[in-house]
Amino acid sequence: MATRSSVQDGDPGDISSPTRSGHRRAVALRNPELLFMLLIGDGLAAAVASWIAPQVWAAFDPNYQPGVGVQYWQLASIPLWIIALRIADGHPPGRPASWRLLASIGEALIGMTVLVLVLFYGAPFFAPRGSTFISLPLVAMAALFWRAAYARIVGSEVFDLNVAIVGIDEGARRTARVLLDSKSSYRLQAFLVPTQETEAIFGVPVIGVGDNLWAVVRDLGVDQLVIAQTQSLPPTMLNELVRCFDHGVETVPATAIYEEISGRVLASALEADWYAELPTHARGFYARARRFADLLFGGLLLILLSPVMVLVAMMVWLDSGRPILLRQVRVGRRGRPFVIHKFRTMRRDAESDGQAVWATPNDQRVTRIGRALRRSRLDELPQLWDVVRGAMSLIGPRPERPEFVEQLATELPLFRARTLVRPGLTGWAQVEYRYAGSIADNLTKLEYDLFYLRHLGPLIDLDIAIRTVFIVLRFRGQ
Image 1 (cartoon, helix red, strand yellow):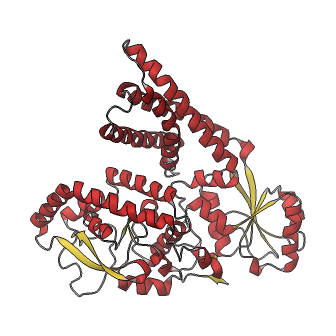
Image 2 (image 1 turned 180 degrees about the horizontal axis):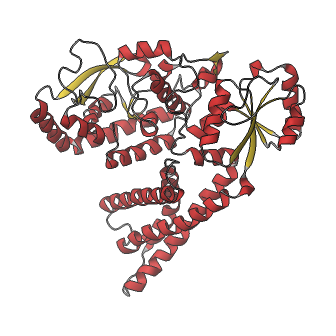
Image 3 (image 1 turned 30 degrees about the horizontal axis):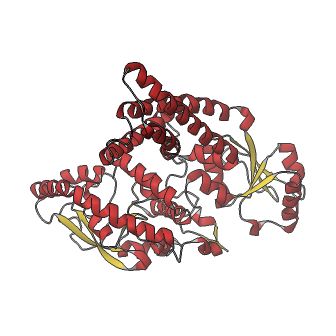
């Protein structure tokens, strides 16, 4: 039995707009070899440019003598650049492809520059500074040329993939939307149903196949079938699916392809046993490592940013008086309530009647200083204390107020699954989506949070951490 949301019509939030990394994920899902080729090319670009850097520096400095540290950096920079480029991938598909490529390379270059500065601060003589720093723009240029060539290769018709979706339920329609809007090499040919039921959907024909699914698939030249909910398919059509598989036509669940392209879980089409895949016993090594990282980095940031917090506190006091801090009850791990701490960004009478009210974009209750604090996310700094004391983590689903949890849990099945891990200072939904001010928006954010729970690990946490830094630097908080 499918777990369904009360939000109807397949339009939770802005599903027509693919996520920042939609194109990348679509290509990776369709052909993992392409992702492997991209990573190998990134590594070769980093290796070649890092090897050339000492020679380039020596041309300007006749007295230059490369030490052992140069070789160590040349080796270490290869995986570091691969990770940096991978994390920096993905930007809004509405922007020109050239802009997205330059932005990805630029973000990776900034990240690597910061890393090198930190390394030189901790170990000033680990490698010659000149050749190390000159290697950064050289690698960036090499990666730029390689990725431009890669984009041209992937964009060729050789890698086009004809797909058809079996079914026209909500999961099928939403999957079709992300396929059509992801600007990937997928070519959606048709919706396939047992009998003709409706006209074209999103401009894509709906074809009744009867007992001849394989014949239709063959005539359409379909390479891959995307399967919605199989419960509604007659046994004869299921048998035809096996026949298609025998002829080399790949089948992929709609929930899986939707998840890979959008970075979200298709919550309204999940099977009831999906709970088995959630980390209900997340107490292993990584859970302990995360807690150690929370204590280490949370405590470090709390100390280093204390002067900034004092300055922010003075600004809040001068702008709108006391209280400076907002103390509010939120729902934490396993549903336990805790008190969260933030700098106050709204008027003192923001909830004068005592009723919890969702914040909205351009909320009139936000103070002048509060608006700047929200955009820079400096209002969240006191939560570092909540991280250190164990009520929160640096990364995880954002904690909601109990009043909202009760309302959202009745409207959105699986909403309480967000509390299976500690709530975070930042999270996957925060870096991928806008502020949630409605049930539909909260369904979208829930789907991002479920994706995070399903893929919980060091790579996605590192991805979130770096993207959060860029959001703060760009003043893009809400």
